[in-house]
Length: 329
Ligand SMILES: [Zn+2]
Image: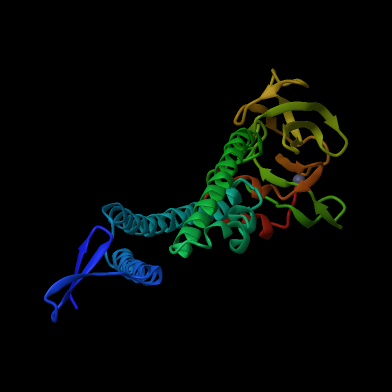
């Protein structure tokens, strides 16, 4: 059936009458027709729309996708670089804890304090909905750890610098040489420890070290410090006591003669001649009785010649002073 359309009026060709006849449609017919045309349009439209959004990207989307890809790659790269940085810092930390801090007598810093404790489940939850979630989370955590490590490390170095400055001064003050010239160690007589008393012939603790030397041999201050006592002391004879600070003091006994400038309160420098060997007080022959005290308590002086003696010479001195039971007191 062919229809001709003109405005809202439809005509139909009648084969029998060979005439066009006007066709009257009901409103229902028009309504149905309109609906069918509309739905067809909707179906096609929706189909094209879906096809478009699932298969064809807009130029903007393409750019975004490419950018996203690059960000992902960049994140991975950054994550590796963070690993490298953390590894370098690990080495520095290890040296810090096991060398610098040991040398300067500082406690090591616990690992937990160095790296902090970042709870990955809570702190980085904001990235949970991202497709690149794990790499973003991981990198953020590494960055936090790195920041923390750097902060703790720089604090540690500040502390070490101040300790090193102190230790430099301390090194000048603590007793660190032999009190008489004793290159071949021949003057080493009796060491620290239990010895037979040369006069009473009983066992007694020898609180110092004896150096046998001719009367008049120079006696040196063994570290920088202040003379706190010059004069006669029971048993010690003519005696000098030097306070070196940092808890250390040294005692020089049986002196024959004091150096002229040595008075109570005077400052001395390591190596200054302070007196001359003698045999005053309770002594059986010319020698220097030398004591090192830390916080008032006698120490073994042979541990305080580290600027003088090599490890081999040290061993030799230990051997001589242990073997030689004869003390001059
Ligand atoms: Zn002695």
